[in-house]
Length: 176
Image (tube, rainbow, N blue to C red; front, side):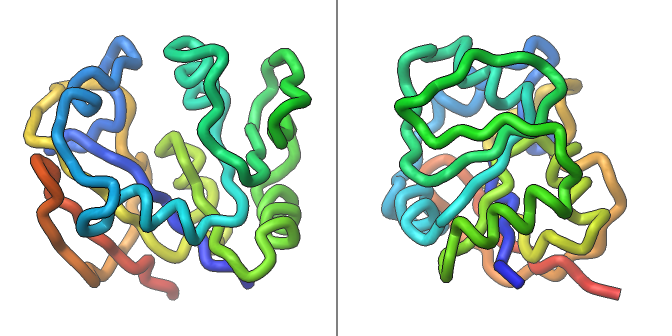
């Protein structure tokens, strides 16, 4: 079984995007990609990733020509998106367990990344396919928006660090 991480950022009140789907509250924060629990170190160990349609649409809306990832990515969606043959992006409406199996095969000995959103990470957890959650908390309260993970899920804290303006926490998912 592959190791799967939901690596994300959140406001202190538990939202990964504000009510207008903006990340301005996060993108203005200072952090070090090579610092504690930084993105650069994390992404180096990732062999495949998965995102929901809203996350993918946000990436398109904010920079339609950019795709910063070189590993295979599954987009779980029922929407129609234009093909991007220059990138290994796979649009699917398959079940989470089926996508997980394809991701694990593609990743080899590297880890899997659930990019977002929170509902998608919750679906991985529902199937027992989520091993850890790494959250970088920004010092802001949004009041509403897309929730970090709209499920009850028991976690064990395993690491805490400061990275620039972000408080980073790693949690192991508690299995039954």
